[in-house]
Image 1 (cartoon, one colour):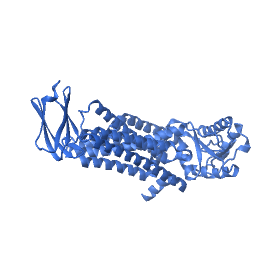
Image 2: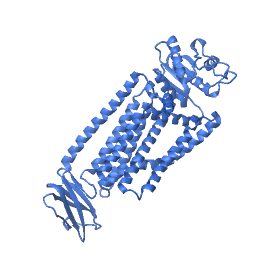
Image 3: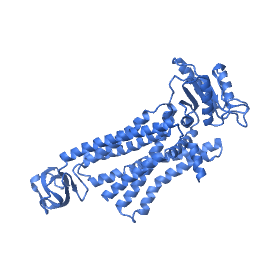
Image 4: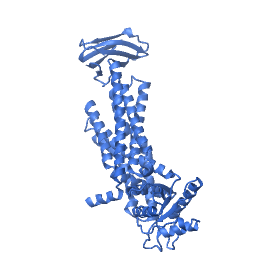
Length: 502
């Protein structure tokens, strides 16, 4: 088991230089500081609002009698000296009774409307009152608004940190993590905004306890809403992997999509099965706590997966700036006669096109470093084969410096950087590969301490899903501590709500 874990870490680990590891700590510190400052300001403003306006509680009743007048409503208390009536108002059949504290303790308020009556227990804590039967307190709309603003702010902070990333930082698991967390907080903010809209529409229909229950269930509803898309995505993963196995042969890595598709479907079904099994064995509050916590973690993982999609979409459309001094072209298999397959030819054509666009824009004429060694069944090295193709496309030989020793992407980057340093020291570089391979190549370049920008050429659709899944797994391995920390925060939040309102 230890050997397997070590192998996985070697494949996926983002072993960046100390300078970039320090940069990650700077990003984390900046995010934490901005969120804490916003949270402190939000708490201060909310506390000021509660103290200024929260020393009374508004109790709403649907009397069922249209046109009832305030003077027809009687309010009395069994316990005196704790709460008193501040105001009584009506709107249609809805009665509103405002109460304010006089002392501390619990008072039983009896509200008589015509032939019917209501009894409420009001808990006075001085500046704040609680309606014990529903959990209502005077500023419950404020809680929803605060939750919405805080989650929206967190989403924007993480998104802003991602947008600040340039160069090699674009090709890092930190970028994926930031995007995934931004999506996660945005989903919660969206859910809170929907709850807030219901409250604004009809404040009499939802008490504080119901709002808390809904807030916990946001991620469960998110899973239900995204279920059709997840099912379609899971089917696409299976189809793409079957096609990949037909084209590339049977390998474990080509099964990653099929495996994840079953994990996604099982994850969606687990919540339903959990409810069926535990429904009559646990109390409603305990069952709700377990289900909501589970869906919170599951939806969090889905948001991280969405983050991978969004990063890949951006990387696929990314175009380096026109200031490059050299372009590394990453190799792959060639034909037995030394000519290029369409996959590798697309990488070379992409580099040629970019160089021409850069020259047309007034940038330097970059040198080409086609990189790739000789396979056992190949007549010449991939670097030489690409160099021959470059010459056939009119590129002067004095601008071509083939690298012919590498056997994998890591060696492509290392050996090519040595050639670049010899022929254009201190120059800016980029690499060209297939679009689904740009992110992984950028990550590997970062582990070598190289500041290389990337570009990708189009390829068959069935390569994409496996590349996405590979980087999702890479994220879970490389940022394991951060992933576990946010999972723990979700569990802590749900547990705190359960302990307070059970």
